[in-house]
Length: 196
Image 1 (cartoon, helix red, strand yellow):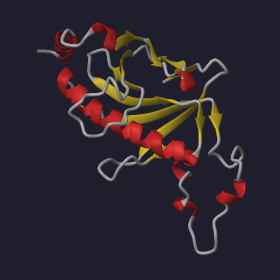
Image 2: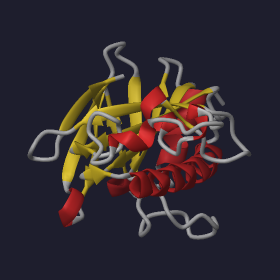
Image 3: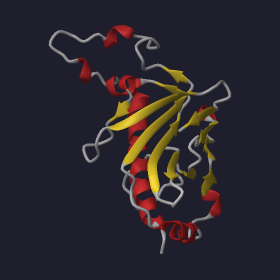
């Protein structure tokens, strides 16, 4: 069976209100403190397949209990996955929040492996992480304590807990390679529009 036909068949196994597909999809955060929508668009006209996840909607048999808000698969015209996007929406971010976000992204990655198997699709080689936020309290220019970013004598700047946030990648676990990480500023209503 060709990938497109298999995908169509397998999608019938999933409740329709748990996914969305098209050239534009939405990842929605409903909790009051971080409520908003991140709208993802495919300028290349690839089909996007989005699954909203949360601690409530996660796959229960996976140990990682924290889960990012969305998993988005970018598909080619023949139905094969090109890229996987892991998405978390936050209102404000501090260093402790960043560590929680990485745990949520890891949970989404674990769930994505299971989802790809359910859909009968191979895991794409390209995996990217996205954090959509209103206020960045991590970056040196936005931190309440920018002096903390100055390395002490005998320490490396790479050891700073925000080094990956600042430099556009994240290390979720030793099981996975370093993944590209994209930061997206949300507007005052909590929304963002992102072209992939």
